[in-house]
Length: 168
Image (cartoon, rainbow, N blue to C red; front, side, top):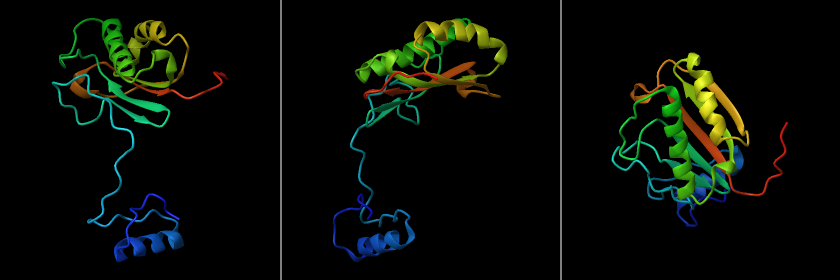
């Protein structure tokens, strides 16, 4: 049974539910009955003047999904400086977003780092390690280009539930 369907008695919903039960695919919501809204709203945006096309972070159960952070300050202006300076700004943005969510950076369990040039890896990594000393799982990849021509972007997932802290 598809539990997220709106509790109504319209024929469209009944048909959609029956179709789901036989096909094991979620039914499409009729246009008169939109899907339910998320139970956890997105966090308030930190970069309010840039109007990004995504949320800065989304809370889903015990997880906080932080969107990719570029080296921009709270006004949305890109910062100048070295890869170390730019990595620090990305990490400070993450710290600020997680603080708004009520957790510390030590709750991060996974990071994805995007660099436009792997020659910057060592310099980025030196700063990264000062923020993520607890060594969450991580991927670091080189990409051809990043938004606004920045050389680094970092996204992460934090977990606020109970976990063992086990590492492999």
